[in-house]
Length: 96
Image (cartoon, rainbow, N blue to C red; front, side, top):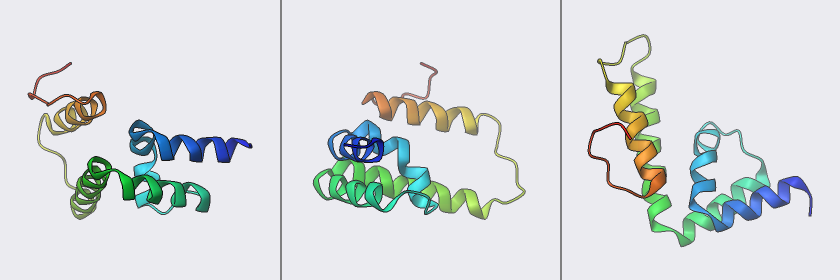
């Protein structure tokens, strides 16, 4: 099994691996093998499908803000929410 196949297998098996490649997927920068494995995982995992939808919405909004600054604390809030999601915990708006 080569490195790409090993990475693809991890995508199929682990939600955390999916979160690592979503931005590349949205930008169209994943290999065909990784894309198929991601689709396979998404077909089986409702949580990751919901996360992908949220990620796509964030990317769309961020793209529409070209040249605008984020409000104070927005980047920290997004990072906190993402970290909490990765840990499988509800985010309470506080640093962890």
